[in-house]
Image (cartoon, rainbow, N blue to C red; front, side):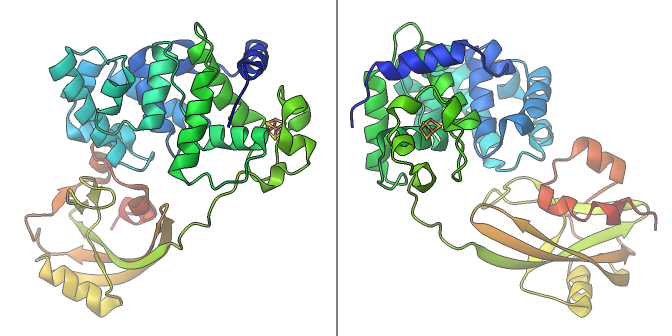
Length: 349
Ligand code: SF4
């Protein structure tokens, strides 16, 4: 694959004529670029904005992030999902403080070696924050380039991604590397849209774009079908006692690790099972009532949950932490999957 210098020229001209103002773009300091890129993985720009502002207000630099309490981090991340990202973010911040005196490194290889920083994020920080000729190739950029080149290979293939990265890095315009990365992202997000809906007439690349000229943009990019989601069923307990509800901490393994959650168990169902489970937790159930059911979809997994509201006579197991609904809202990071049941714990007994 070969790209020409016309690509950055045309894209930068288009980018300079107007683009979205974003806090991490208007002030591309390394910490802002890093935090925003981690948040933007799996999340849209508009959804990220308020989270980013709140996060930076609470943790304005790498030292604050490195020293933040876990509860603060989880609360700031609540609702963004993929919580492993924020744990890695803090681990990387600690490493930046310990190894680099709090200065986020500019070298791609040093960035890439930090926890939670992959090829894309390292390329984004190196080019946007430090002006290095490193590409940041994500789904948006793969879509733009495969359409532009009429490339029908599978974009899930690592070799295709590497080839596109190398081809882009050959044409990175020294002095405008960050803007070129941003312009590719911007084109993918606002013009070369997915699912067969690109705005080709407004695109600065359309004269050279094979997908446009051959009218096949809706067939690109090519992606192998995803594996089917695995489905898991859970019985969820909403344990209530003296105006409080019980939560517990998830383990360090698996999805949503180290977050708080409502007690739950896979592969049991029904009111009798809910009562037995509550008894095993030692909360002496006085009444058990079936509550609402909800489905929560993660990328590869689907949870089907049924809740049971249990009025309890004892505090039970040490793993349980009893909190008021207000404390829960203000101080504890709870995954969105549990928030389907929030009406039940806000109701007065
Ligand atoms: Fe994408 Fe259309 Fe532009 Fe080609 S011309 S890069 S398909 S928006």
